[in-house]
Amino acid sequence: MPRSERSPLLLAGLLATAGVAHLTRPRPFDAIVPRSLPGTPRAWTRASGVAELGLAAGLALPRTRRAAALTAAAFFVGVFPANVKMAWDWRHRPTPQKAAALGRLPVQVPLVLWARAVARSSEGRS
Image 1 (cartoon, rainbow, N blue to C red):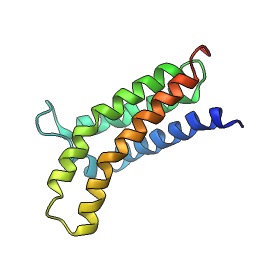
Image 2: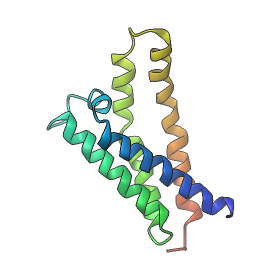
Image 3: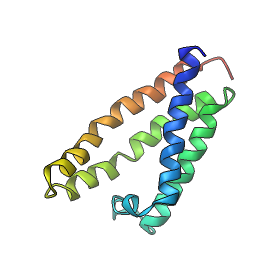
Image 4: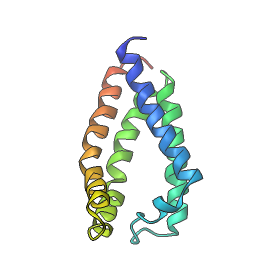
């Protein structure tokens, strides 16, 4: 399988794994939902899990790949406030936990860039 075909499927796998985690083990995700959002944290956790599964499915299919990749890039930007909240909430935890929370912040950049690259490589294929 060429690299250009493998990359979207790897991104789909990452999103599918995250989606399943949000739906099967929601408690840690509930804790990082910004309180300024309306509704309950659990509703946002479930919604993000369903969105991740939908994005994974869209990325897996060449016909919907470009739209799903662009939406995934926006999704990664949209969930950034949850990572900021986690870093803030964990600022007094032991160093390894604090480092993990802070380490999540810059990871959003390559995820956004990866999704955009998948979208670019999928142009004209739908």
